[in-house]
Length: 282
Image (cartoon, rainbow, N blue to C red; front, side):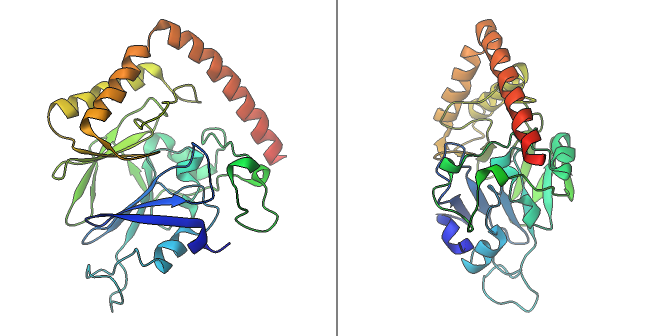
């Protein structure tokens, strides 16, 4: 299957594109965001990596030249930074296809070695409704190692020229989860910290206490009027009020009973992941 068939995109205006993998029909299907800038373009999350995302971006005409106008340029195309909001497979699987890769320092080693336990790699044939290539099977799928060229930390700035994104370290879902905040435009990319669905805190390296702290931080941003538009890692875009509600709901349920039940779920999930990935590598 050609890359042009595997992906689809929608323009949201102001140089922002929403990209999805058409034939990955699962609640794990991650949103892929492309934000074009005047001096650099930014890809936020990279999907499974089953087909060439760089090829799709090129053929679909989503990458502009370094003059900021699109089309041919004697100076070539603007630099593109592929950034992962966290290392989980549905967000990081395509990173190895890009020369410039950014991820939070806490998960850089897992990405570099292709750690399919920490990336929570769990894909079934039924999730992928059209084979990306002849004879493809989900049991063969692994996150390919990718060497980060930039290690992200709290308060780092991703400078695209005409806009800047501040890195926010928001652990809880994973230890290296980040959000990206464009303060001027009140835009927030939340990855899997907040989206309009069941928030997962029982995966390897999840931490409920830290998740609560991260949710409190996002609620404070809403209270301060710093967020209008939310671009999450899954499902549809959100407004500030819904962000606040989802974060508040998580905090309200994260009591002792939830922590006890979650610890049992985490143990089962961790065991299943280790068994599955030991079979994949054998």
